[in-house]
Image (cartoon, rainbow, N blue to C red; front, side, top):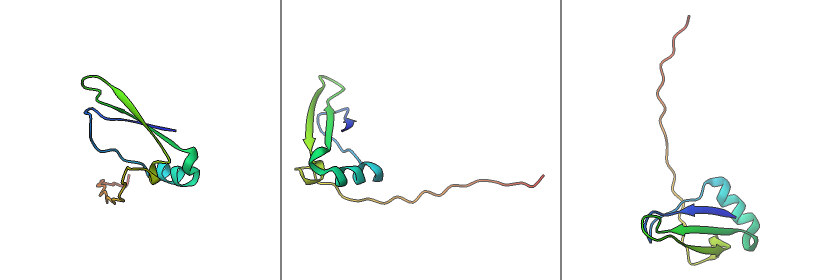
Length: 73
């Protein structure tokens, strides 16, 4: 089971590559528990096998550039 939270009644959520892999491996044994509307009155929704549910996940890739300065001493 994976737990995610949303500030509003609707919004976006993401899965890490590891979470996605586990969801794909476990399928109907994997549950996504989403708590919505933290800002006002929280409620939850549970998705069994979220990769095959009404949720539509799309893969996005992000490249991060890390800058550092090195010195020899």
